[in-house]
Image 1: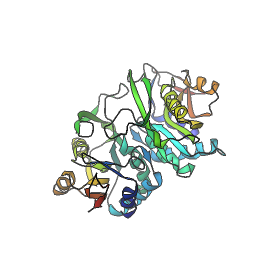
Image 2: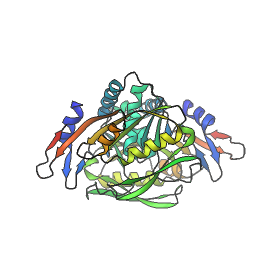
Image 3: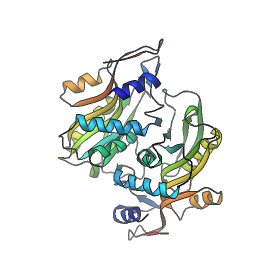
Image 4: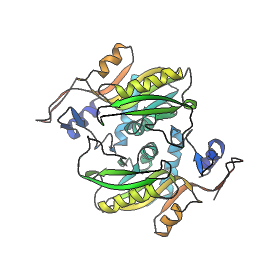
Length: 192
Length: 192
């Protein structure tokens, strides 16, 4: 998606350790008009698919998913929660995810009553690198008997293995910007 | 707001310990069409105000704020982050918030470059009880020299002191549903 690539070129910051900061428009400050355009693009890419629900994960995926849902007929958005709150029921799907960014494993839960067998789901998230968060969300869909119709990612780090693995497993993965290479010394970002 | 009150009556679950679960439409599964209607209502309530930015806090506030921003000319949404990620700069506003729900204190940060002196801000969140999260966000606005034009809350627990205190301090607090009383035995919910 040209608009997103141009925005990453303009405002993205490359850091050592394969870090790409896009927090000025994607995951700390949010450009909701850009999110809306991303929704239109995913609606085009996933056209013809049955979408009953959008699944995402807190925190950065939520804003994108909620704006994007308008392009899928205002279907409900469910976000996986990163820890057990005393306000949650015991009846939850749970999976463990290792975060390389935060260097720790955390549990993610979705209440069983919000994800049902036979529901067709699109998973939305801001980033895809090794794919750990996505694999956790796919696990939860499998536990529920829900069908993963597609996966929409804003920024895929194409030099990490997550995207390739998911495509080999047959998932319809639509990343709006795939970073092929990036250089912390020059700040240059190259897209696939 | 009639639509939100009716939805809480229909789908809200009252639990012991002054817990009101609205996770089927507000803060785990999200009804984005309802969020859009809430945005229209806040746009009406805050009409005539200058709004440069919407500030919220992860996780439950993000989806509401991002959908609502459309009604304020697609201004940027900034969400306060609940912990220090290695992807964040050192240059942040920080405040500590005690959560009664989770029974612990957590740090909340906003990157300084996303909140500037003289900016006019509306704060959006899903719940208001004792007001600890809101007071943290107000602290951050004060540190930045930003002007809090208004505070938009979906559900205020009117039997807890947060709302009263904020109104006494002069804030333009617009809660779309104010719960006056609720009974875990009968499940009844009464609005102010």
